[in-house]
Image 1 (cartoon, one colour):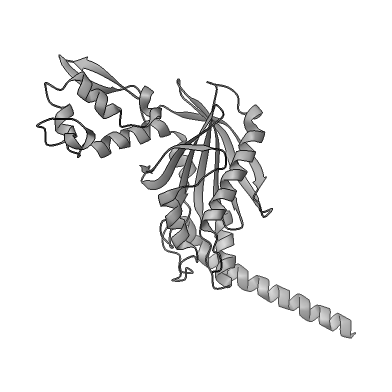
Image 2 (cartoon, one colour; image 1 turned 60 degrees about the horizontal axis):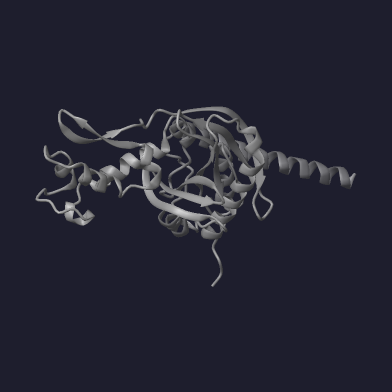
Length: 305
């Protein structure tokens, strides 16, 4: 009799707790899906917010991979850490977008990036950053007040334009060319920031060094000049997923403990032969994604001093 009463009380307690949690979730979901304010958000930052901001500024280091270039870039209205790396004839591009503000939730960066030629976007952004500089700042003697004025001058020389393009990363070598227009030397784009397609999408899984599981989008990105195998996911200190709603649940659990779950978005791109299928690259993509996840964890994990 006593056991039945205890079981009944236990079942009732579980039912009440489940009901309370259900009410909380139902109250939160409208704000979440509207993309507006979440009334349940506490005025508290993730404990590792400083490290997340540092990640945006510094990027990561992968063992045995050489960093060819790294800079902060703005893509589709968001700030990303962009890196290109090289190892034994292989090249990868890595984009990391750490949570910019403690109230910001993950949004669908994958949709934003799907039709975007990342290399062209970075190169166009680099050109734009150069325009306000004085010619003397890039080693050109000229009376022009800025690089923008210089390249638009009727008497600008091919040598001067070549100097401007030499400031760009190596990946920009097939993005611009120097031609002639109405008798004037000009920098002409060879690519468009939207000349890009994705296909062959599937979901893959890998684990970090702490055996936490991460689910990611694995797809092919391509245009007429370049093909890459892409791995996209959101990560946090104990796993990751490509779906924002999984972070939402993670953050809810953290808040019940008086904490917050900081997040970051990752897009890993592995250069492969033009228009090659990505299935043979799946295992390597999983391994590289695991290395990236572990390297990020090293940067954002709080350590006791």
